[in-house]
Image (cartoon, rainbow, N blue to C red):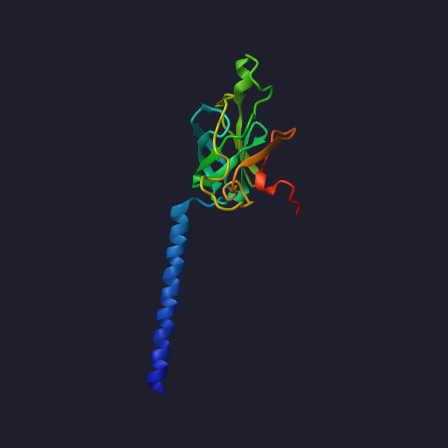
Length: 189
């Protein structure tokens, strides 16, 4: 009985030690991944690159106290919301939105393609002193799907796939694109 108690104690101590090591390792990984947002410290912005581009330009925004919770971070080009892809706490990876300028398309006035970039984290926000030079450009890319797909899947752009040929395209007043594959023509859900 005494031996059984000692074995249980050793097993319990070993498990407790493993749990403590896992917790410590997990907290170290969190620190290595990025800085946590502190609402008592101001959000600051320093610089970004590239300094010019058009729709879907991949950008790095530098600053501090962004945190790593993407649900808490908003980036605006003028008043248009950009896609925030990732954060290390002091760097944001974002994709520029479509036509964020006031008075776009460019009417020849160089001020019309100068766009403010604002980072909002929680209730705090900061705007870069330098403006982003937004250029209207034509962009051709694959939005979704891939060659050789054997079935139609509906989901996010990354998940959606189309079997067969596209039969119909439509664009609404906000320039959203709607696609219908031929195989779905006439089907109702």
